[in-house]
Length: 144
Image (cartoon, rainbow, N blue to C red; front, side, top):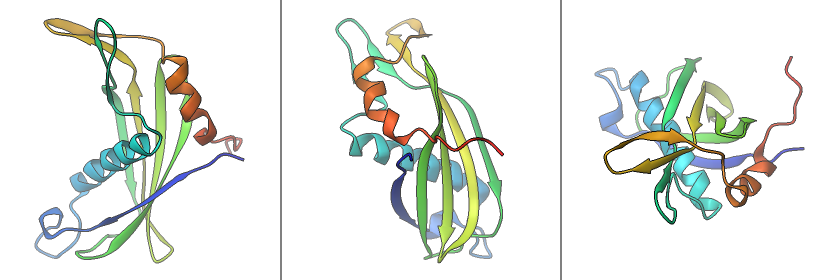
């Protein structure tokens, strides 16, 4: 059975519309924040200095489905697992709940890239030391 990373996020006033409901775009920020927290919990980051370049993770796909509104001051329970871990990319699955009620679910796909000043990012294999720390979070549940 795979592990999942758990965190929380309080809905701030700036994230809401006039009705006090979270604007859809705020969920994309919440998703990225959860990804960063997850990586930091493993001693990793979305930016790492290599010998001759930087390693970073540009997003190539982001998706979010909304089930129920989140509201100002609610504390959201956020769960992150890994749907797919390829040789050069990772797809995270995030779930948002409040008091056991599913609010939203989304995915982020990011590609491991070498970044050098003045040169477009170039995809690279995920280093073994990085991939090893992600493996326990890969969802082993067969698709339904």
